[in-house]
Length: 222
Ligand SMILES: [Cu+2]
Image 1 (cartoon, rainbow, N blue to C red):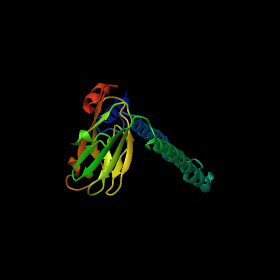
Image 2 (cartoon, rainbow, N blue to C red):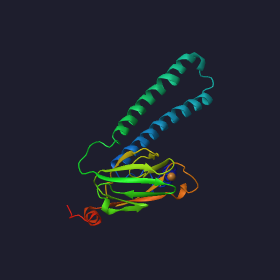
Image 3 (cartoon, rainbow, N blue to C red):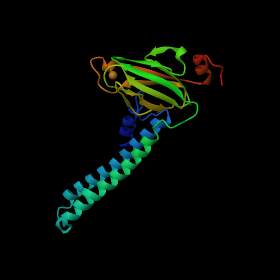
Image 4 (cartoon, protein in one colour):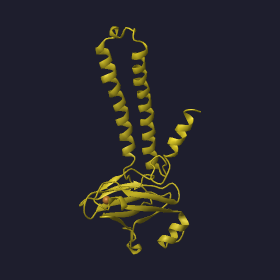
């Protein structure tokens, strides 16, 4: 109980509209999985180091010198970090590869244009829908490719509950694949400091269910 309560309090801070630990889609889910894996690994290593630290105090008469320094360096300083970093890098590459916009059916395309200090959204396949400021509309349960561009300086497009962040770079077009598992409103922010109005450069992703999206797009419900 003594440790359960603080843990529950700490974890309750992990919810909220900008929490990467409360994923609402597969891309964000894999990023959250990587985070939990890293937390577990870091906890094991922390326990190991603290255990050795405590042992050094409690067992002063232990024959520490009998264990060769070189062996400590080899295992603790070389073999262990190499193994940890190899596993982490492999997992991160695997996760990163799955965040790429692979060919898929039925992709909804959005262009997200960053400028100081707001986001403009348009829909390349449906220019008749015009441009919206601060609100981006997507269909829930369908893959969405967001083409991220910038009008002025470097910004960064980040909807923590749907995917990792991707920079908006002047003269470049970066594509991010997202998918919202369910209908809802997901908060987004600019994640790259871009000047005095940076903190207010927020937006919302509205994921609509089939009927609501059909009404938005003026299509017949599929
Ligand atoms: Cu910005």
